[in-house]
Length: 323
Image 1 (spheres, rainbow, N blue to C red):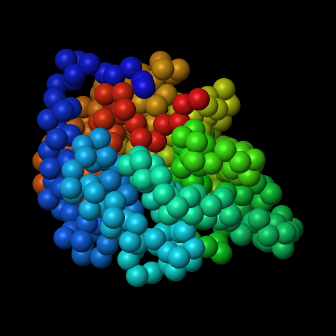
Image 2: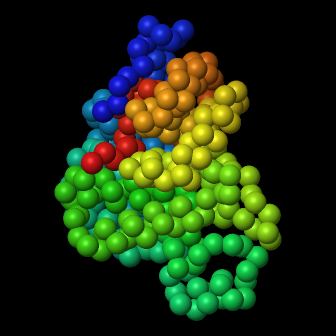
């Protein structure tokens, strides 16, 4: 647990703002228990993030949400992006595993989700694709031997799916759900992939750091989520550069979604990075101003991540893995 920022040092009350966000999330829950992104189709991402945001406050709504999430699981242990699609599963499986662990639903369904994550991989894992990417399709510059997880099955590894899978597997190991050598190897390989795909000056784009010989611009959300997955690798120069980039780009961010992920990341590194610690109060203030009128925010993912970020400012983060 990280040292919280005193609410006396903030111009607004974190507890009040977070309570308002949770109230809006509860009001937005669909009758069957899940959440949509904005519309009526059940979204696994929205549902998982809402569960994570509400899991410290058990209720019948949370129980119904967990049951709805289990009902969306595919037969192979994975989860789709939305109800009724992706029968082969996709990146949201990592979020579902995280949600079930947080709600302490240690069931066979959780174990099958972890197993699916262990066996899922970007198509670079296939020797033919590795050869193609290293010898023929050289427009992007990365080491295809270092692969992670993809958005959907049969595609190349991407940063955000890999980061969430690493967080889920590391927590599964920490909580004792799976301590196999296969998990250790998969986490090590996925970590090497994230470090390899970093942008030259630090930070992460959605997929690669360089394309057609041109360095790509990092994204706030991808950089923040990757940094959460790389807790424990603070001595890596690339991680330090990325954290420095994030701290210096986050101020004035107009998007509560991106700002919330940034707050989660700098909160996770506050103990070992003075510039992250010094900027956290101001970024939390900005996020509270953007989310104070929670009922006006239609995107349930933004609401949930904002609540999680403000809780992280007070010392609790569902995404951190500490050994």
